[in-house]
Length: 191
Image 1 (tube, rainbow, N blue to C red):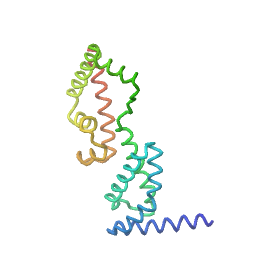
Image 2: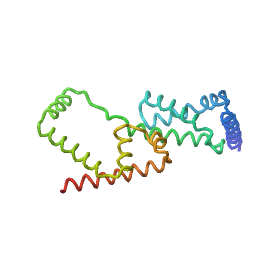
Image 3: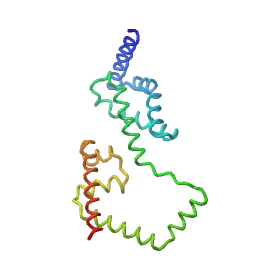
Image 4: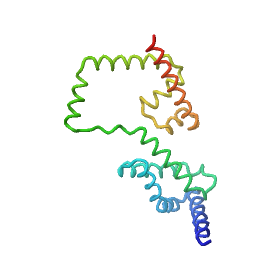
């Protein structure tokens, strides 16, 4: 019973701090940061498995939370809301992270040899041509969505802002646009 009382007291205190932060009290937001930064960092480490990335993500999460805290309707639910922001941003960061490149001499030499192969260059050039042709056959919305994400490197949140559409809509558009591009490219390959 004591654990339940402690939980309720912590939720009420958190709710009070959130309400104060929503009213513009920077000290209240600083207290929220102090209390929940270890939780956000733990989630970030578990998702990204890199301390520097996790620290950067932690900062980004709290900046996002500070910007969007007015949107939180139930202040006592702050920690769940913060966890959701952290998980979503960690997934976006992990998806966008460049693949690790091995620098072992054998792998490095094999990579250089592969780039110098005329057949590999021809195949790569043909893939790019098919991809561009597929993109050109798509509708404006699909093409703009794919270009924003893959070419300009915009995050889902940035795309949501630039397209003035909810995050869920952007995710759906990206999913649909990928499928349509795959269909267009496979039709070009068959033709």
